[in-house]
Length: 593
Image 1 (cartoon, rainbow, N blue to C red):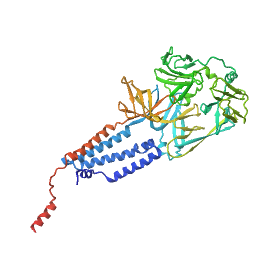
Image 2: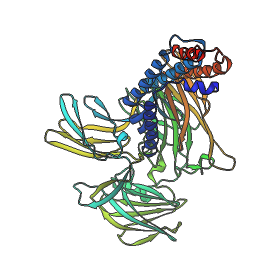
Image 3: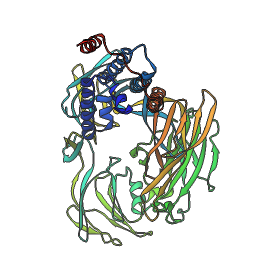
Image 4: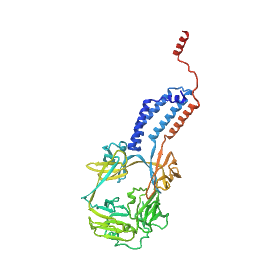
């Protein structure tokens, strides 16, 4: 028998327990394939019963080692192996129970200190007074249960609200239906677009920030609702004034402590700092784009004409730093893309070009009188006005050659959403939530990171479904992000982030570069480069982990390796064992006979 075989035979581990753990791990692998890593971690690997299995295995190993006490020299590999495995198991249990992990999504020039953790929560807020309650959920751990019927009682400011999640769809798809007959004005139109063999049918809603316009080929398709006759004149060209294309526009800003908004012209110089007089805030204008565009070379201005003016700047103050990219022709850009800011500022960007339509535009205008007007712009100052625009009639854009037709127009449209589920794999989580307070009730569909307002009782409440969050003891600011492509392609071979870590409690400021194989380690936290998000503002995705069980795991591996080495270096003493008394008596009898 070789030393290695003797070493394996000395591991007195309960075979049934190992079989159970092996079956659980196999099941966890299948579970992860179906529902994802976050779900299997919460439902299996971080569950109390799995930690109990590992703890019982560690106790079994300790008992097996103590059975051979007092230990001799030949027991050293056996003892070291058991101690090492016990430390590895203890480290895994500590990491699962007390470890912290999550992701940070940081746009360039912004700072963040909040982690998004694997589990999801419901957040209930009452704005007046400012109260909120966080309710942990575990729907994603049992993604096959599509009708959980889970009720959460919520007490806010003396009022009791019952929130019921009656449907959970891990992979939801939403179909929308627009009909007529609403109680209030909500203009919507159904438009047919045709060019050569390409055909599309779209719905546009003038009062919906996500549905009022779209890009189709080279055209901007917009449905707008000016409120006054003078605004209609400016859009149709009757109120235009020449010689304003070179103006950079004005930032209108209202900061905390200001009684009235203030207008700050966009300066001619890049990286120009402007102090907001009477406040502790400062604005740093980074760049101005008269004709903003995203190309293969990055963000550029296609021309000096104010066809799509945009300005980027940073606001700094006691709360931190916020980065902005504002468009004069698309004022809802920040809201649509979900930008969050630390400073409670009201900011808008006005430009003389915002009184006109963008180039190559198919603009549909609903005048205050209710009449539909069509405005077709070219690449320059040319434009055609269709007044009134007739339903069911096909029109042609003069320079693009695109044909369009307004098939249906609803002055009071109603948008109805039909949500269905495609499968159990977690891709697009959506909840159907019902809130009840007294005789009042409200309901809504909530996607992950979505929110809805419930008009209940004396004060409406806002309900949000989002990942759980944990605040770090330090702040990370993204200074610069770089994506490195394979030569001749747009596929990323690597990406890296230059960050600034600020620990105000300890007075520490660190400047580091984080790459995929070079994490930032500070105060027990490891910050890894995980991914990135493309867009006008470069955004990095960092994975953060704090595992207090790591020292035990490392020590356990070192001790196990030491046990293997000692088995081959020291060997087993070659002593002749003394036979038991019964065998000695048999030998004496055989000799006497």
